[in-house]
Structure formats: C-alpha cells, structure tokens
Amino acid sequence: MTRPILSARGVDKYYGGRVGCRGVSFDLYPGEILGLVGESGSGKTTLLNVLAGRLSPSGGRVLYRGPDGSEHDLQQLSEAGRRRLLRTELGFVHQRAGDGLRPLVSAGANIGERLMAGGWRRYGRIRSEAADWLARVEIPADRLDDRPADYSGGMRQRLQIARNLVTRPRLVFMDEPTGGLDVSVQARLLDLIRHLAARLDLAVVLVTHDLAVARLLSQRLMVMKSGQVVESGLTDQVLDDPQHPYSQLLVSAMLQV
Amino acid sequence: MTTMLTVEKLSKIFTLHQQGGVRIKALTDVSLELSAGECLALAGPSGAGKSTLLRCLYGNYLPSGGKISLRHLSEILDLSAASPQKIMEVRRYSLGYVSQFLRVIPRVSALDIVAEPLLETGAETAEARQAARELLNRLNIPPRLWALPPATFSGGEQQRINLARGFIRLRPVMLLDEPTASLDRANRKVVRDLIYEAKESGSALIGIFHDDEMRSLVADRQFQMAPPNGREKAE
Ligand SMILES: Nc1ncnc2c1ncn2[C@@H]1O[C@H](COP(=O)(O)OP(=O)(O)OP(=O)(O)O)[C@@H](O)[C@H]1O
Ligand SMILES: Nc1ncnc2c1ncn2[C@@H]1O[C@H](COP(=O)(O)OP(=O)(O)OP(=O)(O)O)[C@@H](O)[C@H]1O
Ligand SMILES: [Mg+2]
Ligand SMILES: [Mg+2]
Image (cartoon, rainbow over all chains, first blue to last red; front, side, top):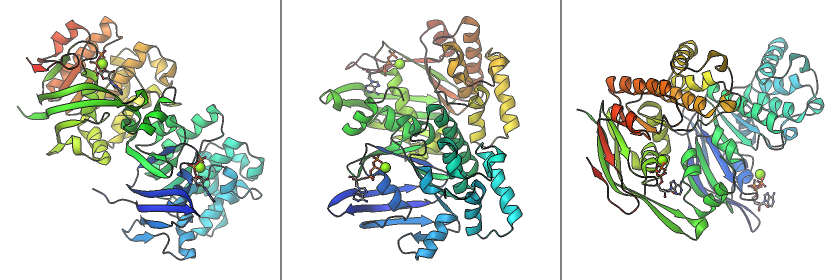
C-alpha cells in the first residue's frame, strides 16, 4: 500500500487556556478526500490551520511526505521553506475567498502569482496558463483582466480554487469552500471540486458543516466535538451507522443525507 | 467451487443514543458461505435484518461481532478488521452493491453515473461511455434521458440507472437489495438476464428479492432469516 501523504500524531492546539483541538491523529493517503465535520467551535478550522502549517501546534506532530518520499515536519521547516511548499505542492482554500486572493490585482495575476512562485518566468506562458485555468473553473475568458473585487461570490471562490490548483499541488486544505453560496452555485462548485480532485489525483482535507457535501466529496470522515475527533471512518459508514452519541445527533439533525 | 465469502457468527446491535440508549438486535450469530457462480436469496419478514446483513457485508454498517472473510484479489481478507482504505479498494475490485435507491449527484448525467465504476478502474472514457450506453439501452432507458442528471427521473428509471451502474462492471461478489422493487415485467426480465450472466461469469451473488417468481428464477439457495431474537438457518 502507498504511504500517507500527511500524518498527524497527537496534535494539540490551545489558545491560552482554551482548547482549539486536542489529541488528533490520522493518516491521509494520496488522492484521498477526508471530510472534517462538527458543530461550530469544535476545532475544524484550528486543526486545518495546524495541518497546513499555518498555526503551530501546542503539542504533537504533522508530517508531510513529498513526492520523492522525503518527510517534512512543517513546523521544523524554515519560514521560506514552508512558504515554498504552501505555494507549490500544497494549497489552501479559505472559506472567505477574499482571504485567499489579492483583491486589487487582476484574476490573471492572482493565478500567475503562484506560478511565478513556482519558478515560471515567461509572461506569455503564465498568461495562457492562467487563461486555461480560468476556463477550467468555468469563468469566461474575458474576465481574465478583471479584479476579484468585481467578481460574484461564486466566481471568486472558483478563482481561488484555480489559483490553488494551477501549480498542480498534491494536497489541498479547504475550509467550507461552498459556505455562504447559493445552492445552485454550490452545486456547480462541488461538481468542479469533485472532477478536479479526481483528475489531478488530489488529496484534500475538507472542512464542512454540511453532511451532504461531505457525503458527495469525501471518502472518509472525521467527526469533531470540543476539539477532539469522536469518530472516524468511511463516509457512508459514519453517516449511515454513526456510533458516537454526538455523531448520531449530527446525522439525525440533517434532513436527508 | 471456490468459496468467495464466509460469514461467521455475525451480529449487529444498534444502540440509539438519541432514544435513551435503546439497543436493537438486528443480527444475531449469522453464519453463511457463498461460492463463485451461485446466487443466495435472503428471505424473512420485514425487519428480519436482510438489508442490515448486506450493509454489514459492504462495510456500510459496522458489525458488532463475528467475522466476514472475503476473497479479494488473491487473498482472503478479514473485512470486519479492514481499514477504510482497504474497504475502498475491496469495493473497487471485489464487491458490488446495488440498492433500490439511486444517490444522485448534482449536475452529473445518467450516462456518466453509469460509466463511473469503469472509469474508477482505469477504463478509457469513450469505452466506458459506450458500455454505459449499451446497458442503458438494454434497461430501456430512452436515449433522450442519457445526458440528463437523474434527479428528476421516475422511481423506476432511477432504479434502472442504479442497476446499470451496479452491473456495468461485475465484481466477484455482488450484493443486491431488492433490485427489481419498482420495475415492470419487461425490465424485471432484463435484470433476471443480468443476474444469469453474472453467475455465468463466475460472480457470487446475495440478493433480497421481494417477488417470489424472481427469487425462484435466479436463486440457487435460500437463507432464511428469522424476526428479531429468533434463529437463522440455511436450507
Ligand atoms: N485565534 C483564536 N484565539 C482564541 N481562541 C480561538 C482562536 N481561534 C479559535 N479559537 C477557539 O477555538 C475553538 C475552535 O475554533 P475553530 O475556529 O477551530 O472552530 P470551527 O470548528 O472551525 O468552528 P466554525 O464551524 O464556527 O468555523 C473555539 O472555541 C474558538 O473560540
Ligand atoms: N441505521 C440503522 N439504525 C438503527 N436501526 C437500524 C438501522 N438499520 C436498520 N435498523 C434496524 O434493524 C432492524 C432490521 O432492519 P433491516 O432493514 O435490516 O430489515 P429487512 O429485513 O431488510 O426489512 P425489510 O424487508 O422491511 O426491508 C430493524 O429493526 C431496523 O429498524
Ligand atoms: Mg471554522
Ligand atoms: Mg430491507
């Protein structure tokens, strides 16, 4: 069996005396989508940020395994090394698209920036690659020079996804990528994520409060409560036969998943 | 005959924490064996645990006790102790499940839903779509529906999409939960033929069939399941 792309071991994060997340351990395999669900304040965003090396854990370790098999503890890397990884092999899709984009430069430049960080230099090639990715996320080509500030919410989210995927990352962290969007826009975005993840063989850690989204996109699910993972397993198993009282509560609160 | 599946003393108890911790004994000490090329019918009254048994076998429900051994690739695998990754692999190559209900995916056409299991194991898109068209044709789904997402289809149409998705790639063990529940006579015959062909090709099947005629046509053996707290026996 292939080796995990990401391993968490006993990850804790405290904010002063308050628990962000506690004792989280799991392995994520290449090409796998792991859903992270749980009520508001249960520690999903905290855990995601620690996993992505954006927050340092109070305890425990997170190991990322590169394409050559080398292991990187994101906390042990230099700041420059971590930033390089985050701009090439890793991606991070924020819940508010604005947090993951530069609002005042063009869409094309937003996509191109990550390519340049990855060593691309020729303007023409960067521009055509950016245009190609715009098309892949179903944004009309004539919007390439517009600023994200002038985009709709759904388009901004798709642009953020294009910006992340243009460097062909192997692992992407997503925080409620469809939160706050209309249902129809959501469906389109979900479809896009599903296809791109399959085509690019992406591993994804996906935070969502929507169990239907988790059902659709993720193969595996972790349920969080008060900072801890209370249950994990195959997505359909956790949703159809939840074991923990809290998972049962969560599932029974949903209409139809 | 090659044994494909062995179930030993399988039990399943649901604990409903929302209902004050009520425990429902759905399966108690179920044991059975299944060989390549045969079809076993699960019989028993409503609530006897037929669907629960199939779901435990598929890894959709967690067994509370007992052992499930499945022939997977060239090994015998203890499914009850398999990791989620292993179960995903088993579902891709060794174990198929067809329920009565189709889970639709927004914006995905009927054709692509049916073709997906082939694509998952590396088939070319054109080849997978061609196979999907042939199967949809056999199941009498009119071509005008192929490009549409099945969310708006009738119950019987959705069930046939689901059947096509289940049968497009025969797996060595196939689990069928009332696959013909809302089909008319002509389509039931198609399903009967699909099951015959699956057996011919060496697949082992376990099915729940609501109609006696279908069951007597396709099943080689019957496994009688008793209502809760009773006993199961093989015939
Ligand atoms: N920067 C911070 N400083 C102090 N406490 C924080 C900080 N960020 C998060 N917390 C606390 O940590 C806990 C987990 O928060 P987190 O944002 O991870 O939850 P979440 O599961 O993502 O919730 P939501 O679904 O509402 O986004 C909460 O109690 C929260 O108040
Ligand atoms: N996910 C679940 N959670 C709780 N109880 C369940 C669950 N699934 C099944 N059960 C219970 O297990 C028992 C067996 O149900 P099951 O659906 O397996 O019966 P069945 O033999 O398939 O019946 P039918 O012929 O009506 O389909 C029932 O009491 C049912 O309520
Ligand atoms: Mg959050
Ligand atoms: Mg049933």
